[in-house]
Length: 217
Length: 352
Ligand SMILES: Nc1ncnc2c1ncn2[C@@H]1O[C@H](COP(=O)(O)OP(=O)(O)OP(=O)(O)O)[C@@H](O)[C@H]1O
Ligand SMILES: [Mg+2]
Image 1 (tube, chains in turn green, brown):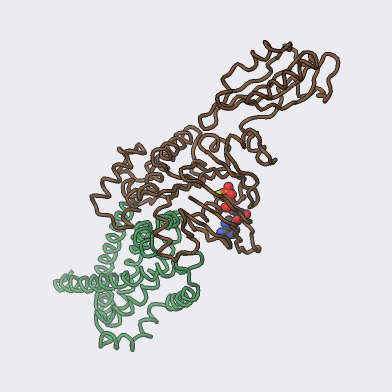
Image 2 (image 1 turned 90 degrees about the horizontal axis):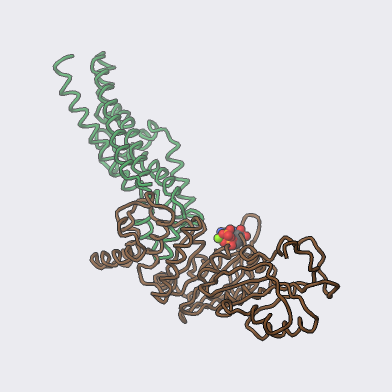
């Protein structure tokens, strides 16, 4: 183990955490409403609107079917438009967000679908508006599941951020490729892998704890 | 109070249209407990859900307290629904909210101030006997307790109407009794109009004032519970009642010949039904005192329907034809329902 390793890893870890955290927040802010939209506009639901449901569903499916590495490269012009550059930690977040939003959307939709419709009807029978049903029934009731799913999303974001890093985004992936692979530094490679494993373990552990805490069923 | 006028409901299903309700008209008075009974698939849930428009009738109007709610727009309808509480077979509580928050839910919907919510929920918890469970989650409660939460929640915004869709069908008989008692109590105390959907005559018998029997989407029969119990008109009504009040003859008479005309050594078998006060009167003893007949008692039961005594007897009258006829005339004058079963041999019943 050499003296340069610790600062290298700390810096890369910081970049990864930054990329994952910011993309996660943005993706959730977009993905959860997307999931609500997908669910509530589906057949027999409170805001049933099949044309919207089909169009949005098709777009979601289309994005989800593109492998991340291709998506990342394919949207470089879009990234440049949004961030002003296609390289760097911030630029890497554009494809990360774009890939996560439909993923979260579908996951949230699935959890919402598991809520018994009777509870929604009970709320309707009390005169709840659709917005109140979303805020006070759908989201709280699905929250334990959503938390568990967001945990999975964070973990796949950690993986994807490493890929994004490899093409100039910084972070642990970038470090592993540049030092571990291109400069033949197996110690850095191993250290990066260990840090990634620990990160994923921590996220999973915390996610499970929180989901369990919220789950009153 | 509640007026359903020519309600029709057709569901479009994959297998074609389902005619769930056919031209149903009902009038439910203020303060009444109105029972709707029917077999599975008869259209009970559809009917009760048409009252608060959880299900929109294909045709017909629903008028509640003089307002035609079928003509309301969404926001008017939501306001109207706040005056109509509803409880469900599977309770439909929020699993991630405490008992307290479940009951507070309808109040939060109308942005009630926090301390008003607190005092109202505390009051309701007390009313349904769950004051010690305020901080528990539904999964920690028994079925009966969950339904109490459902009732408290339905009453939170002071509705005038309570709709109950199979509210006791998921509960054991004892818990059913206590929930029915609670519904009866709040009906009295709050002058609430209650609509009860059930497939059990027991529920109707226990708490309802009026009953409608629904069969394949039409009302087969309706009226006061006592009248319907005593003189059911339709076969389906008789079936429902027979579950509670068996019309079977005592064992001794099941396999013997019953004749329309008297014969040597025959007695006249008849079924008597007493309602209300008369159930306690000694009619049979005055009958044998007044006329030269003897009366053998083969079967007797005393039940009650919504608190009113309800007695049933099967007796065998023995005597001359004249005396028997005068005895029957006497019975007809009393408030007793008399059904002649027929003449059987006096020796049919071994222990008489
Ligand atoms: N959403 C629906 N779509 C299609 N058909 C329906 C729907 N809801 C009910 N039906 C049909 O309408 C008829 C009446 O159903 P309903 O649920 O009102 O019966 P019910 O008397 O409440 O029965 P149960 O005692 O089983 O609850 C049934 O034939 C049922 O299959
Ligand atoms: Mg039903």
